Length: 417
Image 1 (cartoon, one colour):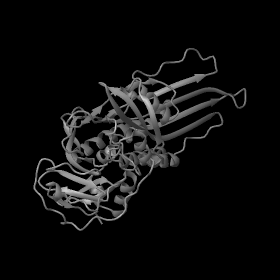
Image 2 (cartoon, rainbow, N blue to C red; image 1 turned 90 degrees about the horizontal axis):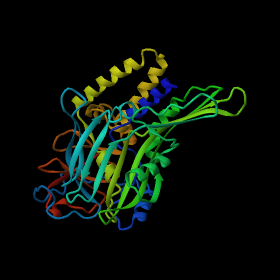
Image 3 (tube, rainbow, N blue to C red; image 1 turned 90 degrees about the vertical axis):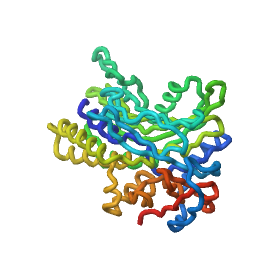
Image 4 (cartoon, rainbow, N blue to C red; image 1 turned 45 degrees about the horizontal axis):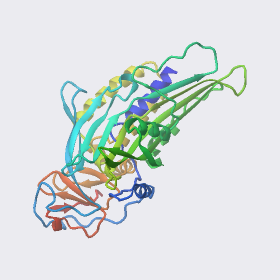
């Protein structure tokens, strides 16, 4: 069972560093938490096309807009995620867009749980200026549990750092996570995120577990989000907790009694957990998508990461069949696409490849009029502006929005043809 566990741990480890996905609806701040979750279920799709480049550039440059932007309009500024301990010196792993005026602490963390977690993952806290709202992304430990009807002696505890649990899906896992992170919290709602799980589920369908008359194996990847209410410092708060989980269930059938399960095993790999929190009425459910889908990984860090992955793959494949290596290469590539770990060259070298990346990650690719580089932004917004004089963008679905009315000089961007 160890080799199969290693195989599917590699699948989970490949899909890290972003809570990216397709099809999630944007939602601006609402006054009622249940209305927020209802909007999350809507699955709104982008329509229409931006205006020609160069339009609407009136205004003056400032650190932020001269006056607050209207609801549904978001100014996002560039921030760096640094990998301080993955290599012999710190490297900028990626730049991401965070709300203007917010701050980012943390970066890429390696080996948070040893062999019972992802090799590397985001560990960041993005906070509003007043400290009331946060988006936190952090590594999560794997879990496992066994049950036996055979007299095989005492069961072995999970490996150090692992959680002893038998969660059989993302819903169970998120409920337990909410109770652990926010003791006494009240669950308001839950939703599956099938679009965010689709790419990994497709890859798993192409690589089914080996069939055996005496062993039944089920592997599934799910994504979900749970909405909770809790108290913090006397204030009524809301939080949306999301994760994607790979779960493997194995049942060993009895040789003596047909249909009886003698031994069962369940294990799960969540990789990362994302928590968006804010005072009641101010929770922005579209925030994690605007941030995650903007990730631009840096060429040097990508090159070093791939060197690490190649060395690890060579060690793992010494005794593996060629077909298995081909399958793992395909799974790793899919995980990298879903996570956004690829170079700008991959976006511009082939149109069909770029469009496939866009569909998996839920992004639209634009030509940045300042840098000339491709930039990926959340596809649920019909209009994107490049702010002049600083590394920032404005996203909106308001066809009548004019940045100059708010003291901002910005150029509207057009999607890459």
